[in-house]
Amino acid sequence: MNYVTAENLSKSYGLKSLFENITFHVNEGDKIAIVAKNGSGKSTLLKILMGKEIADSGTVTVNKDIQVVLFDQEIDFDPQLSIEAYMMTLDSAPIAAVKNYHHALHTGNPEDMEKAMTEMEMHKAWDLENEMKQILSQLKITDLEAKMGTLSGGQVKRVALAKLLTETRAEHRHILLIMDEPTNHLDVDMVEWLENYLNKAKITLLLVTHDRYFLDAVCDTIWEMEDGNLYLHRGSYATYLENKMIREENLNATIDKANNLYRKELEWMRRQPKARTTKSKSRIDAFYETEKTAKTDTRKESLELDFEMKRLGRKILELHHIDKSYGDKVLLKDFSYQFQRGDKIGIVGKNGAGKSTLLNIIQGLEPADRGTIETGETIQFGYFSQKGLHYNEDERVIDFIREISENFPLANGRTISASQFLRLFLFDDQTQYSPISKLSGGEKRRLHLMYVLYQNPNFLIFDEPTNDLDLPTLTVLENFLQNFQGSLIIVSHDRYFMDRIVDHVLAFEGNGKIRDFTGNFSEYRERQKQEEAGQKEEKTKSTEVPAAKAAEPKNQLKKKLTFKEQRELEQIEKEMPETESARDEILKQLNNETDYQIIADLSTRLEVLTERLEEMEMRWLQLQD
Image (cartoon, rainbow, N blue to C red):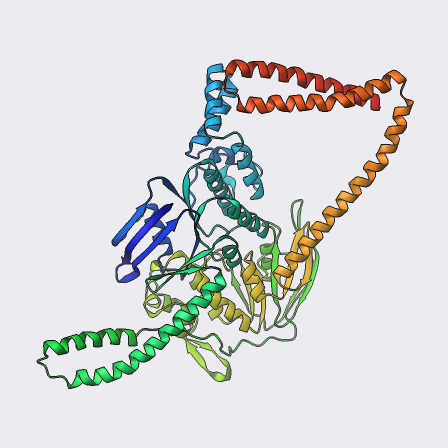
């Protein structure tokens, strides 16, 4: 079934063309990831599909039988609503049926109850409320009475994600789910759960994400947006990279041929008289097409540069017996670590475990409760935080960077200019001379990254650097960091990014405990899963042994009962499972019954069986004692 068809779609803002004459289809069951540099038009394309923006030309046809649902970066909510009330604001028939059912239970009106149960059955909503709470629980949202206005930004996003997933479950119709960076503010456990959920769900998905492991786990198609074009790739992220490389090699070969032809045709053009014949006009038109191809800019600045980093002394950074708590919550307990030159350390752990607090303590932005910190005299920190930069929005990008220095130092006394350094991080000439206010959110994030790196620090500290950065920028950043000779600390939930960069992990495991693990993130994660599996196995064994030992005293106890009591105990143990089975059968009938009189009769029988079960349980306990 076709969901969406777009034909010859174009969109520009002023002189900047985002995409031109692109055509694509979305069919039922497709799971598509969009990959593009920030500012290439990803968000604009999504808004056009949602009907929130209009294309300059071309057509978008959305099947009338589908609903397009968007999970966006910006979340609208009433801060006075509880989480549960916010979840119930979903505009769907199954949610309305659940609300009507609760209202009927509260009022006790038989007619309302009959109508509500009919709605619940019609919309298959009996398990919806439990599923909603399970989704919230998986996303670490447990206090459903908490007000939305009291939640952190990350918690708000997780609640909104739970609401969206509940909506796709509640609506028993065709849905195109559009998700813009869904893994931001999720820890690794949550991301892995979401991967599994989206894989099992029978949904059609259009996804923007920087998380390459998540992309590979969920999507089977990649749309690449570059230079106003849309390229389709079937397969993994690695397949996309291979296809892109082949395309660029072919383009470069075409440009080389065009350059040779251009030089010959340019000489012919210069020899032509002013009065040109019709015959020569076609050759002139062909010349301008050749010129356009020959002058195509495919420059890819290399990051394999020998950077002149400020000298590191013998002492880098030493932490001795650090403690830090907030009230009863222990974040760091007797933590010691000695950083070495060239350390590339990843810090992982659940949200709120204390990772950002450790970064602040290292830089002297926050005091420790106990312990000492020794920082080398030559250390210059470069801190890429989640808070962003302060800047004058009317200032041009190039001027903002030049305020630090006109040039960036390389080895052997060489330098590159601020403009060349900006080009390394995908800021083209037009963008460099644009005011900061014209940048997209992702481009401003990239400018923040540039601001940190251009100061040439020798100890980099990155707190969630991959949030809101596009995949091309991440690739450039990874190449930069792999060549970086100083010390590096990264806090990130991006597994692919961590695996490429870090070779050492400090894992916050709760209650102030920090594990020192040598290896990359995936190796640590695998060790963690093995240990959890081992703990579960040990727990199972430990519960089996006491149960077996408990059987002996029980048999001995039975021998001490009178003959009559022994017979009574045996009868109860036989009758209890039968009574429980009868009760469960009535509960099952109640879930499927719509006739109010039958419901009333079943409810009476259920009450009798429940009372009988309680009596048997009490007597069984007395006989056991």
